[in-house]
Structures are given as C-alpha cells and as structure tokens.
Length: 192
Image (cartoon, rainbow, N blue to C red; front, side, top):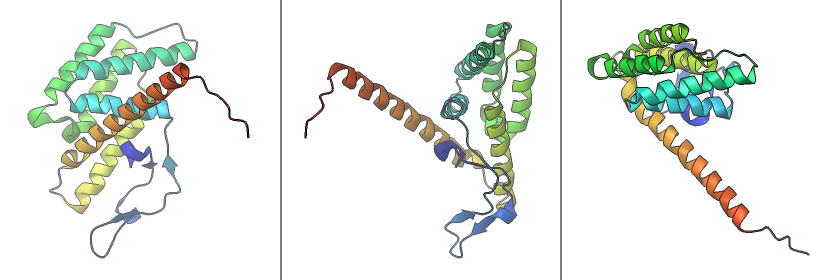
C-alpha cells in the first residue's frame, strides 16, 4: 500500500482491518484519514529505504542531504547541511550496524532516532514524508505483530520496497526514452 500505491492509512489498527472468512484477503476499513505523498517525495522515500535494504548507507545519506539542500534553496534559506561527509558517514555506519542481528526493519524506531539525531547535528532537514512513512511502517508492523506475533514483517516488506524501487526506476527510464524519441522524431499532425 505504501510503497507500490503511495497510500498511507492514517488510522490503521486491528479494528480497521477485516480478514475475509477464507483468511486469504485483508480489507482495510475506515479510509477517511489517508495520506498520499507527492511523486517526488514518494520516489525519495522508496529510494532511501531501498538503499538501506541494499546496505548502501552512503546513497541513503546522500539522498537525504540532496533533498534537504534542495528544500532549503526552494524555501530561500541560505544555510545548507553542515559536514555532509560526516552525516553520510554516520548514516553509512548505522546501515552497517543495522545488518545482521540488528536488522534495520527490526529496530526501526531506534534507527529513526539515530537518523534524526545525526540530522540535527549536521543541519539536515529530514523530509517529513520520510518520517511519516517510517512511522506508518512501524504502526503497520505493530498491527501485523498483534495478528501474528511470530511474523517477521521485514521479510515481507523488503521485497515490496525493492520491487517498488525497481518499478519506479523502470517508469523513469521509459519516460526518458519516450522524451528522447519525441525529440528525435518530429511530430506530424494528420489532417482529416
């Protein structure tokens, strides 16, 4: 829902989930409070989380800094991130720490805190959509654990996030290809 459809249910709890009698489908109820992020923010979120899953903390940190600096420029603020390499290094170290036993999606709350503390130290404006998605993922993990305490939600979420990043990359490449073709082949209108 979050990564493929850019749809975040803002009041998701077990009472708002109906399980079909055959146990094969989940139906989300009470979708009166939902969030949909801009395409740019959605792409950023998927790219950052896919970078974490692929153990590429440098890319995740760089994406967060680029987004922060761009938003500062758009808001006409003259400050930018401080010691960008230091911030990227912290995100890379966290990513390495988050592999194996301390897997990122298992301790998401701890890592969000770490990212926010590093951002504060380095004056990186964390994208509010990124934070809201991380919190939504954590809430959904809680819902899943209340339905089945043995579920390892990250085993389910990782392929979805990687697939969403792949689909977004394919769509972007197809759009670029289409634009290139349109530039190379002049459009001729047909007269009827």
